[in-house]
Amino acid sequence: MSNTAVRYLTMLRMVPRYPKSITTTELADRLDEQGFSVTMRSIQRDLEKLSIDFPLLVDESSRPFQWSFDREATMDIIPALDLPAALTFELAKAYLTPMLPPRALSHLKPHFDEAHRTLLRERNPLGQWPNRVRVINRGLGGQRPAIDSDVLETVTEALLREFRCELTYQARNWPESAEIVVHPLGLIFRDPNVYLIGKIEGREGVRQLVLHRASGGKLVEKPLERPEDFDLDLYISSGAMGILHSRAPIFLHLRCDKPVLNHLIESPLGFDQVTTDIDEDTFEITVTVGDTQDLRWWLTAQAVHCDILEPDWLREEISSTLQKGLFRTQQTG
Image 1 (cartoon, rainbow, N blue to C red):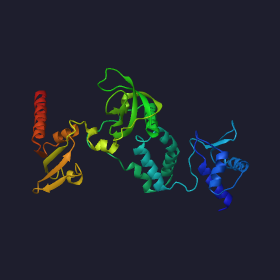
Image 2: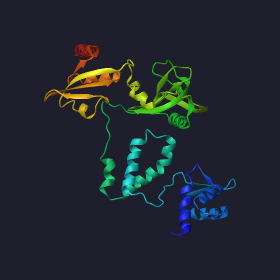
Image 3: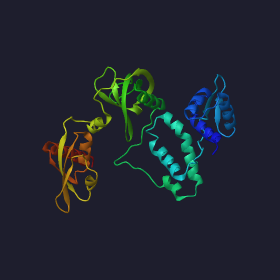
Image 4: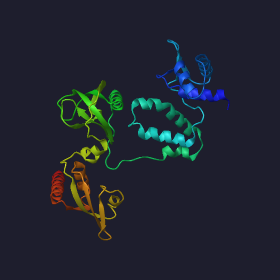
């Protein structure tokens, strides 16, 4: 390949997608760093030639001129998008869309579009893969509530830049919505909801804000105040996302039926779980878990398949819940 062709490809890779842009001066500096000594006049001529075959835009309102790729341009420059890469983009679009910042999605849209066209164009069984794979969450999953796009954009921008943000928020137990300033610490996606973890100015402790309850937001360009001891993974493992009843861990001892609860052997409830085979019909586990509402819901749902051997107080609590449920069911009947 000629030196000119290599320079053209190198230069095209340096041009960002609109609304971002790069000047011919900046291109000259970057090309020089890559070992290409070329004048700004030559760069301008090169870009004008390349714009005939590539979707390049130029802003001539100021000098030096500013260049960018069209916002909707597909980047089908060598190498062409092959089938495995197209499949990866298609699956990423399906399952990462709720988790990616809107700005990132807008930049990826041309790649998603090109991937979809590639899968439609290629006569290959792999192209049918997105139609043959689904991800289903365990349990009774509700439909994901709609989140205001401006709110999501504001929150993700604040997280990325480590700024505060102002939200119009309506908590479930608030009589009306309120303007709050949040110091965002992280996002947690737990179907069907998206939670903003952060501190609210004027209130104590780290809070969980359900994003679909926010109706407006704007960035506050002031650095957020992050607690020195805060770690998102430790926050999750503490059981905070499970509606904590107390911060004291529970040492749980269960006798479980086979094969209904065999998944507990394959997917332990905790890192310290010990499993003991009792007979061909049952096994026992001991494990340390958080004192959460999720634990109670799970034990209640599995009551016909497991016995709570320890702790006694938790067995009595679940028994009381089941008796109340039975009484209500009988009253209804």
